[in-house]
Length: 120
Image (cartoon, rainbow, N blue to C red):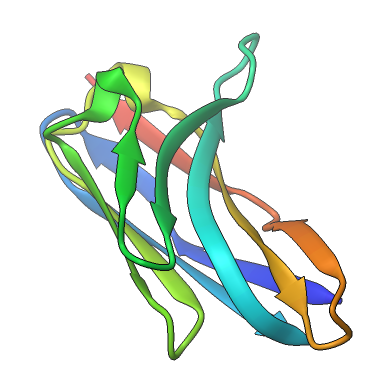
């Protein structure tokens, strides 16, 4: 079992910044990739940012230049820094981690989600 706990999020005015944190725990041998997804009301969940164990990153076009994802492999944590937030960034943000457990089983785990609301 691998659990993800998110923190951060909240209400911010347009142009402001927020930081989301994700901590993974449990029977983790290695986490290959960590990412942040978001889902706005009435819309499908979309990938916001992803980072590999080696530090390679990928971003949705809508957040490039504004969001930055990073991770600490030793602590099994990921951080999403969000700057220049826009009302269209309002959504529930969820952390995802994929890897292998200490029992040599693959896992793909999700956090409970955290609300980000950007007011205009």
